[in-house]
Image (tube, one colour):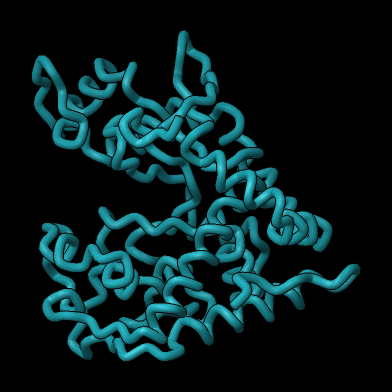
Length: 303
């Protein structure tokens, strides 16, 4: 299967988007044996600690479904957020996220279900596909998820489709980052800001201040995000997010994004440079400075 649909020259980009979203929706349930428990209280939609990253495709899909301008739905339902990098406790990836509790949750149902974010489509089957179901199911923040209380079936046919959906997400997230921030995954390194972050955490009553801080315990995620929005979001490339949303309101801007989305050479380049030549930002002397560096552990490099 191909992971996207080619856009013929001069075709209305909204026609392409409609076809892509319909195909994504078909794959969401194709060959799936998973069903939500009728008693589910939608903890994933309500829990503010569970971050839902979205792509430009998701933004355009929601705007199309709600018949509203992209700028309006972004300002009401989305924001820039920080996502944990497991390889380095001080690193966070900056991406667009859904506000929580989910503003689209209506009487226990998703109000944009046909065009819901791809991460929502992937959960929870992707945990089985990745082989992390048992590990994640035991995590504290998943304790109220009825769907994780028992094994989830994943047939070979469904596993193949899950792989396709994961490849679609990889492309959506990478190209979205390139369109919004002018390069691939955008990371922030908070490692040189421990003093300020500990003070912010203490001021909010969120953490103690040990001599050797352990970031995952002493700096709660909300403190990091608040620091980001107050101190860092005003710097480029994050400050231009409003301009990007304005671009996406026009057919020309949508066509520009879709041309990037279909560029196989760009996608391979971004995919190949994700870890080895990652762009990492640091706040240094009041300025946000970008540096390319490898995130691959020396033990895993091939020479």
